[in-house]
Structure formats: structure tokens, C-alpha cells
Image 1: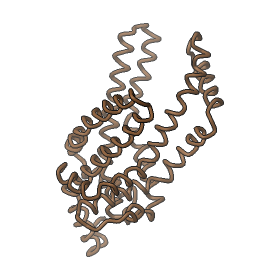
Image 2: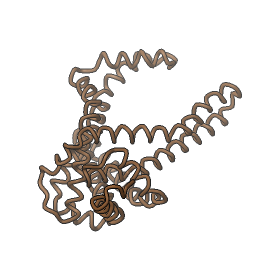
Image 3: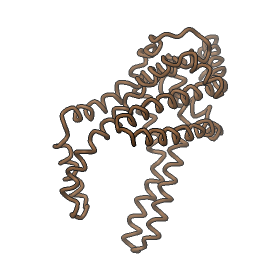
Image 4: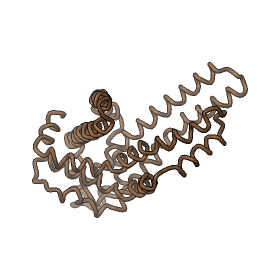
Length: 290
């Protein structure tokens, strides 16, 4: 699968990177906002370095940080929620573009915007997936909250640490499982634009039943590339902070494009045929899906 993804990526390298860049704008805006806010946060934090960090003091630090932020950094924070709501269709466009690359079809830059017709559906799909993933993590979060009460009741730091870390681990595992279960929903909508968000989610959950570990194994391989990216970026940052940022951005785009292309290949090899068969069946018999 990775070989097939590399071959498709090699033929359309620049277009794939541009598509990944545009589809990743929300996360890039978040990273930029955090980086450019660090100086203001540290400046305000120094004023409370000898104070006990209570909730009230922490809120004062946050309010002070906001007041010290330059106008352009404030604009970044304001654009952030807008980008998460407005740009999900670009992710569908990227997936559609990559599917065409994998299938050996002619691709153009305009294909990135081919799913603009799914503007509202893409937003609804993204919101539902986010809510469902958060709900899956609630049991682990409940254990983490319980650990705080246990600490107050028993004054046992060991019990608190054990429960807190156990809850965190449960929350992470459940949220990863949920993310993998719904991972095929955007691909299904990108592949068949007439599909609705609820139908795509239901189909993804059905397809991924018993196969989340397989997809996780596909994705886990790229953790090595991400680690290598961090090492190279850190070395570049020792020379110049700007150089480190640029190197990190370029390598992140390449790894992200490679990862998404591989996931698209996995979808193509496992589910694209099922999707097309179901579509043809419904054309012959509109009531077959029911």
C-alpha cells in the first residue's frame, strides 16, 4: 500500500503538497497562534512566578496574556474557529483528489474544490465526528475526575496518580478507537458526494467493525516519520528558529500527504468496491438500502 501511495505521490508531488497545505490550514493556524502567543504568556507568567498557581491566578494570567497579544496574533485566534467551520470541504476535496491520483485518473488543481457542493455536509460531518469522539472519551475522563476526589478523601498521592493515569490511558484508547471507527466517513463522502453525514458515519462504523487494529497498524508506521521530523526540525532550530519552523512545516506536509495517500489506498483496496456495488444496487433498486 505504501508503494502504491508513493507512486501516486511521486507523479503529483507538488499538487498533493498544495492540497495538504490548504486542507491543513486550521491546524497550521492553531500552531502559529500558539507559537506567537508564547512570548506574551511568558511575560505575564513572570509577574506571578512567586504566586501560588490557583484557578484565580491562572485566569488572571490568561486575561493578561490576551491583553498583551499583538493585533495580528489576536486575528489568528479569531480566524481559528472560522477556519474549522469553513474549511472541512477542503479536506473532502483533498481526499477526492488523492483518490483520483490513486486510480490513475487525470487530476487538476480544480479537483481540490470539487467537493464545495458538500460545504454544509462536510461541516456537519466534522462536528458529529468530533462530538462522538469526545463522548467516547467520557469514561476515561470520569476516572480522571474521580482521582481528584480520591486524593481529597484519602490524601494518597499513589492512588491519585494510578487512577489519573489509568483514566487518561482509557480516554486516549477509546478516543483513538472512535476516530478509527469513523475514519472512512470523510472518504465515503469524498468518493460519493451525494451521501449524507449520518449515512457516511453509519457505513464507516459498519466497515471498520473488527478492522480498527488493521488501520491503526497502517497509521502507526508513520509515527517513525513524525519522530524523525521532530529530530530534524530540532537540529534545524539550533541553527535558526525560522529555519526550524520552515523545515518542520515542509516535512510535516510531506509526511501528512504520504499518510493520507496511504489511507486512501487502504480505502481503495478494501471498501471502494463495496461502495460502488452498493451505489449500483441502489440505482437498480432504490429500496435495496432499506
